[in-house]
Amino acid sequence: MGYRDVKFAEDSVFLVGGGAGFIGSNLCEALIDMGYTVRCLDDLSTGKYENIEPLIPHERFTFIKGDIRDLDTCKKAMEGVDYVMNQAAWGSVPRSIEMPLLYEEINIRGTLNMMEAARVCGVKKFVYASSSSVYGDSTQLPKKEGQEGSVISPYALTKKVDEEYGRLYKELYGLDTYGLRYFNVFGRRQDPNGMYAAVIPKFIKQLLHGETPTINGDGMQSRDFTYIDNVIEANLRACKASGEAAGQAFNIGAGGRLFLNDIYRYLCEALGKDVKPNYGPARKGDVRDSNADISKARELLGYDPEFDFEKGIGLAIDWYKEYLG
View 1 (cartoon, one colour):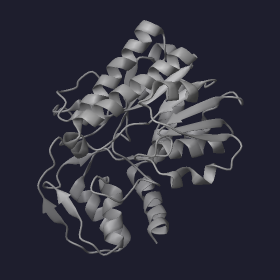
View 2 (cartoon, rainbow, N blue to C red):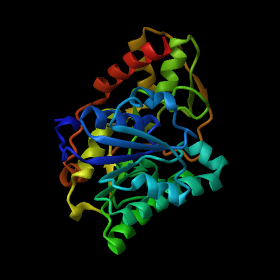
View 3 (cartoon, rainbow, N blue to C red):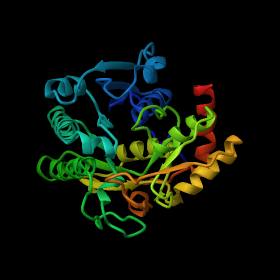
View 4 (cartoon, rainbow, N blue to C red):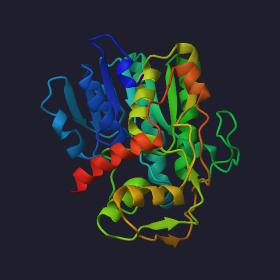
């Protein structure tokens, strides 16, 4: 299957919020490759121009530098748009603990601005990024929609609020919204740099550069690592989903569960390295275990992830070898 099997009318126009970021730029690239018209809205606060630079000359691609905290900017970007895939948000649980007010401004008010602009402009489907972090302190595995715990970080709270607005915008205004709860996405163009970098690109970079990675906690925390192409598929399928499925949130993972220590050993073997990691204190606000029940997304969105961890990590390692070369 895969995302290339999802078809739209040839003249369809897509807006990707946060389109210069890791996930957003991959969505922009996929949509252009499939022959559609794409607008990218990004203020480049966390996104990177280099991620979309190869698309700039394309006649069907438009880059709009703008902030989703400005409603007029959102409205202008959304004029004549059929489908919105909003990835514009600030990630990182630790950073949200340090900057809760900024996260409220961007992730809640910014997302609300995008929903309101979509409503006013008559957008057909509004798909937005949520997060597995909404499960909070729930210890149940696998994680299943409707069985959440209490959120344990400002970042998680922003995503929970976004989902509630998504529900209300369907119920009150008839806007078809679909929240995608991403589970630890990885792949090409995920930034390996900085103190808030995700674990897979960070470990790959450190191992390639002869550095000793640090695992936060005991390494027995587990994650449902999800390759980027699965996430592209989920966004496209949500744009094709029925209105009956709108107003809800869906787990988007690979359906697996991998321990961080095992991931580290796997990367060492794949890169031909023999480096014992350092262990540091566990991070505040981190969910201990994560494993997605994706049956709801399969049933209502037609989501059928093509890439398991091994297939995805092989492609990711190849990309980082070239990128960091």
